[in-house]
Image 1 (cartoon, rainbow, N blue to C red):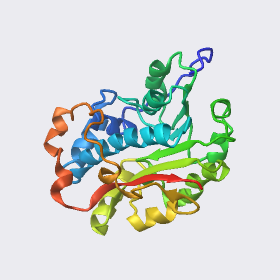
Image 2: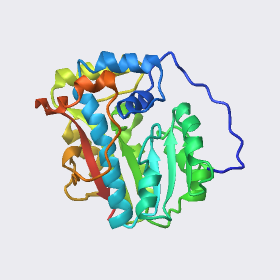
Image 3: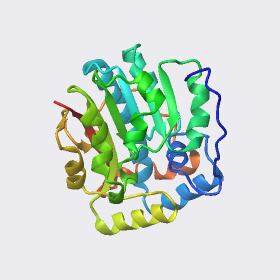
Length: 284
């Protein structure tokens, strides 16, 4: 982060749940409020798979970024909707395999900026900005993006576990492809979102999340494919349940599930079709 830049005051709501804090709690983060924990505890009995799915997505982040830095040779990353910092954040994974990697984190939740400042202090190759990634043109013109991202070189854009926050009214195809249209060949897009094939359960989750003030839209696998497979080629093994995207039993583990949520761990093995779906795609 730019050490000379003065921090700006931010307003943090502790009376409504925030997706970044709810997500972070399932990963063991302590940066949350009672309203976030209450919301998670009300949702988990109805959608118990959500705890496993959250953690599976975070493990996928490590494998995807490792692939992008080590095998694809990517040296610059845009992480859209990064969430709260935990262990093995994008810049830490990327720089483990490519020390010269540069990362721009983007999130609309001001609490992400507050907590990321300490993590990134003095790191000139990494910055976090508070911005709405739905406004791609404004985002790409941000001075920190222009400073760290060179669009004449291949880059990786990450939309991890944020696809379900994009409503059709937001024009998700535009959001996902604006930066990729500008990117040079050899650039990559990493994407994941929760999918549920049971239409009644999907509608129930949509209603629960939107009522809580968290924008949410379930999609089928076919709908996700239609959003992504427009000029982009999936990297093997393609778009899949993230459990099956280059699994690695030896990758660094996550912190333990919080005690309050431990009863729901393993629920994704119940056989119901709710999972985090996605993968990595390359611009030819």
